[in-house]
Each structure stands twice: as structure tokens, then as C-alpha cells.
Length: 212
Image 1 (cartoon, rainbow, N blue to C red):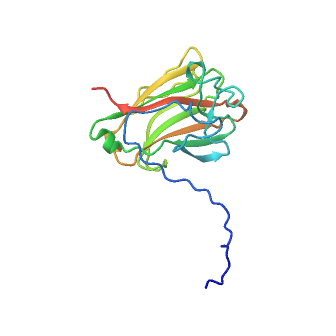
Image 2: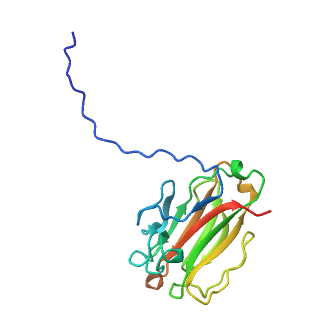
């Protein structure tokens, strides 16, 4: 007969996160409205290059002094507060080999621009086969200060100055060499102007095919 203990040793609960499946169906479209404030969406991830302020999901106002609200006056957006830092936000892994084959894809995104940001405040979008800036291709850089400009890249037109504060649409082509089974879009947010910096934000990000 069994003469051992009738209970097993106690183990503390463990929480773990499973890996997300790669996105295979396009377009990928995200407005960030389903995320909780000050959190990240499932399968999106972040990292800090410098400082302590990461990307989060914001609603404007109290949690982001540079962006009053989401596009259209409501909803959430990917935001970063003004404190000195450079932060990265990684998209879910994209299987662009299955989604696009040899066809060219593009990135479309709305970025908020206003008259109060520091000239160095900006959002730069990259694409890479890993969730890293090492070897990444820079698609476009958008200054958050609406009077600032930025030169064209091989994938996007030059950024011109704007007359009014608001959300503006930007588009960049994605090189076909990035049509692999593991592709990431990376947003680098820079607010390194000390007390001259203000919050930054983007939303309505779309990865789809370049129209024929």
C-alpha cells in the first residue's frame, strides 16, 4: 500500500506569455483603440535606446502633453511622453513572404504634428527582418514640430512644414527584400530636447500592397 504523503510540494503560480503567430493576412491595420491606456497591444513590444520613458497607448491630454487626442478627436494612439529618451516600438512579426510574395508593400501612418515640440522631437519608421535596429532600413522620419522639414529617403517623399496642428498622413514603400517570413516595422520615438520636448504620437498604421 502507498505510505507516502498525500499532498505534493507547493509551487508558486507562474505567469508566462506565448509567442504570437506571424501575421499572414494583409492589410495589417491598427488604430490602437483596443489597448488599455498606458499599455501596449498584444504582440506589440518595446525597448529603450536611452532614458526611461517607453512607448505606450495614450488617449491624449493628461498622458501626453503634445497630442490632444486620437485622429478624429477620439480614440487612442501609440504615444510617448516628453521626458528625455529614445524608445522603440516593434510591430507584431509579419510574414510578408506569404502576404506579398514578390509584390511591393507600403507603410501608411498618421503622425501628430504641432507647433510646440522641440525641433529634435521625431518619429522614425524602420523595417527589418529582426526586432532590432541593427541592419534596419529607414523608411521615413517625421519631425513632430510642424514647421520642421526632413529630406526624402529612397522610400518616402520629403517631409514639408504644416500650417496647423493636427494628424497628417505619410506613406513609404517597403523594399521587396523585406518580404520575408519574419519582418518587423519599428517606430523610433525621440524626445531628447529636455524641457523643450513635448509628447509625440502616431496611429492608424497600415501595411498593405502598393496599388497596381
